[in-house]
Image (cartoon, rainbow, N blue to C red):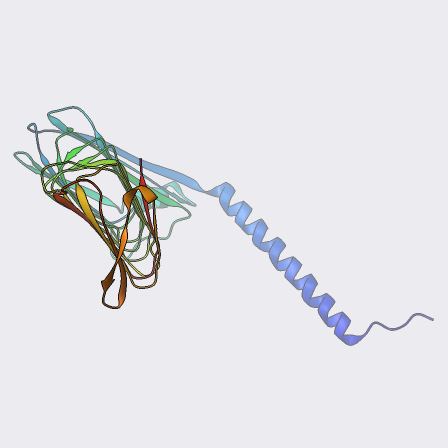
Amino acid sequence: MIEPIPAYARAIGSMLALAAFLVLAFCLVFTTAGAAVTIATVHNTATYTVGAAPRVRVDVQYGALIVEEGRDGRVVVDDHRSAGSITRAAAGATANQTHVTINQQADEVDIRETNPTFQLVSLGRSAQLTLQVPAHTDLDVTSLGNVTVSGIDGNVRIQGSSGNTTLSHVSLRGDSTIDGGTGGVHLDNVTLSGNASLKSAVGDLAFTGSLTPGGGTNLRISAGRFSNVSITLPHPTDARATVATRTGNLNPDPIWHFSPVQSGSSRGWTADLGPNPTGTVTVTTEGGNIDFGAR
């Protein structure tokens, strides 16, 4: 005799069948919409004649920013964005809702990317602003997205928001500040002359490079509660290091000979990174760990 199917089993079977139907319907709609998407692209390039050491100011409200070494005597702005929608007109309108304005006064170039308060709905949108600048350029950046800078020598100030900030093969001069907001800050093969401040509220911070000796060069790193810090310097380095953290740990290369010090409610360590140091390296974290390496 065949046993009747319990009511709860029938209910579970019905729910599973409904769930499978909804998943199938979603996949069908998504696939159909994807096949019907039209992509519109906007690509503009402009070149500005400048002197040997210009100042470039950039305010980017959407997308990625790339700044790289170009030819002396000119600043090249390459604006590339795209958007997808069901119709070509809608895709074009979405891609064009981002506006890039550029103003030049002598050796100062101001670049601003803006978006409307109420943005059109799209099925995919991207933007990238690429700048080619002379090797000796002072740079002032405000950005909501990722920022990548390479190959320049000058005073650099970056105020980030949530994207990652990456500098490579850069020489920092004067009073340079790199604030990643909640994003990570990564400096690789960077030479510091003057004073530099690195900061992130949440993201990790990493500095690999060197401090110019004999000039009282100062590097200050400030990290939030969940940010880890990694520093790699040549041995010896003309600086005295001071490290403080509330709940994190210091993991130094033994070659530095760090010694613990009393620092109020924080744990602290100090070390002379070279004989008779004239510069400083100061690291402060809320809770992240600090790796202090040598190369």
